[in-house]
Image: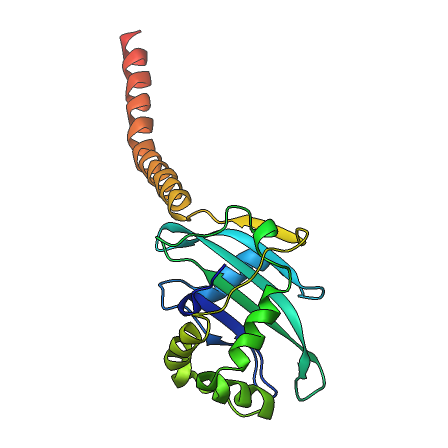
Length: 211
């Protein structure tokens, strides 16, 4: 099964800098929020594997993701570095119907090893290894290089399903609409209450005078 490198997200930390998106899909989505929803605070040790659908521009898009500890790298204080890797399929792309039986559990490490061999991404891996500052201006070019690097990348189905978790993200729009309707009804009730109270007072007075 092939991956689309243009739809690859990689969030990691350097020797001297905190977590950054070194590769990111060019789609309208808050990817930090997406990762929070997908991994739900998982530490990445052992590796957390997630698959399902994520909301991108009001569409449910299939994805696979992994949060894991990069054993080959340490920060300036000697701490292990946690990375997030995520691949989404375009709206018209084909994703596996059952990821645990189609994608091996170590797919994320295979992807990084493949990327590391590509000359177009050598500066990124040198940046990570040397402790140099992260150059965010290179992100677009690097995403293009990743797409070319993974053009011939393929993974084979595993012998046995891995420890995957499934997440299906729903759009926040319906919840927002319901909240707005409730707020509107509450406002109408609040504004109508004084008029209703005055009407009841008038009816009581009318009954009193009638007696």
